[in-house]
Image 1 (tube, one colour):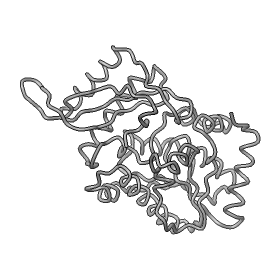
Image 2 (cartoon, helix red, strand yellow):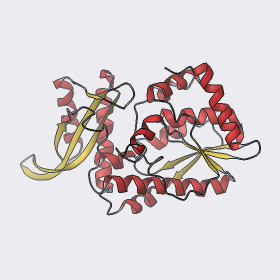
Image 3 (tube, rainbow, N blue to C red):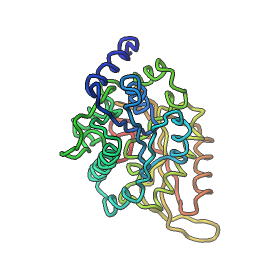
Image 4 (cartoon, rainbow, N blue to C red):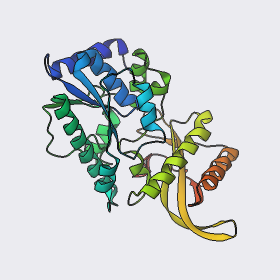
Length: 306
C-alpha cells in the first residue's frame, strides 16, 4: 500500500525540483495508468510548461490513438506523433526479443528528442514503475523505457515519479488523483506494444492479426476480471477453412491473475468463454488457423511473450 496523501505532494515536488523554475518538460504519454499518473503529477508540478507527447508507433491496441485524443482532449498542448512507418522500418528483419526492445526504446527516445526540441524542453518525464526496473536490471527482459534506452540521450534529465511503485500502488495514486476509471482501472499494456506479442519479425499482417485478436480477448474476458488478458501471434500451422487447407497463424490467448505483475497465475476461464474466443478469432480473420490457451504461470513464463 502507498500513502497517497504523502506520495502525491512528494512526487510533485520532486518533478518541480528536477525540472526547475524556468525549464520545460515533455511527458511520454501512452494512455496507460502509469504514464497517465506521471502526467497528472507533472501537470500539478509545472503546469503549462509540460507538453504531453503520444507517439503512435503502429504497435498499439485497436482504437488507441482515437481514445487518446478523446481522453486527453483537455490538454491543449497534447501532441500526437504519427511514427508508424519509422517504427516498422526500424523493426524490419528484427527477430530477437531483446533486440526488438532495444530498437523500440531507441526509436521512442529519438521521437521524444525531436518533440522536445520543438517544445524547447530539457527534461523527459516517463511512467517507469518498479517492476520495469527489476526485470531490466535482473536481466529478465529489457523494458523499452529502462534497459532498452540508448546509451546517449539528449535530455538534461529523465524524471520518473512512480519508479518505486508497483502497478497496484500506481492505481491507488490514480484514484487519489481522481483520474477516470477508464484510465485508473485499465488493463496493463506493454510499452513496446504488440511487438512483444508477435514471435519473430514484426510485420503489418501479424500486427493486424494481433490487434484484432487482442481486442476480442479483452472484450470476452472482461467479465472475469483478469489482471491482464491478450492474444499473441506465435507461429503458423495447418488448418481448414471451408473445404480448403490453409497454412495460417497460431494465436495464443493468455489471461492471468496477479497483484503487481511480478508473479502471476494463469486464469481458469470457463470453457464456453474460450470457445467464444476461438470462434470469433478464427471466424473474423481468415488467416488464423488455430487458437490455443496458455496455462503457464509466472514463473516460469513471463506474462508477455517477448
